Image (cartoon, rainbow, N blue to C red):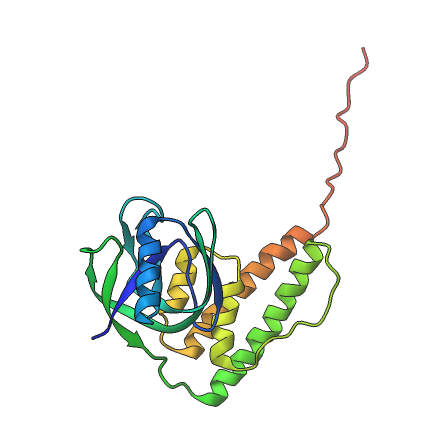
Length: 218
């Protein structure tokens, strides 16, 4: 069973999605150096309890392998790392003997869904996500323009939750789902919820007429 280094963060990394990491703690600089020396990747895993900096963190059970795509070292000693999400994994056994976490992991694969159903749900999600993006641009007073979205259902099932401004537990729940259709349906539900909230922000204020009270003449 493979063993990988873990980078616990208050972030969910999805497969195929980019992420920029700022590494400054000695333990994670050491982790990155070991990964570079060994030609290996590390896993980004969301924190369930604990802190990113300082003390130990209790991670979730499912994370994503981070493929290193660029490293920039600064004079201060900090490091900026560009990564892209690769395979999902499940932690089988944690090891806390090193300065940084490592774990034995099992890599996860999506179950095979019906292709026709996956494409139908993907079309609905594409339509809803495009409307969501238009509302965001309107709220930010940005000009409208074409929105380039993938039509591959699996890729879309990761792109939408990675882009949505939703709470970390909801993103983690989406990451742990083992089917594209299931993930797309939940992403679509969250999209509709977020669109309703944004529509409420765009709605004009309702003015309530207040009739002055009559005062008796003395």
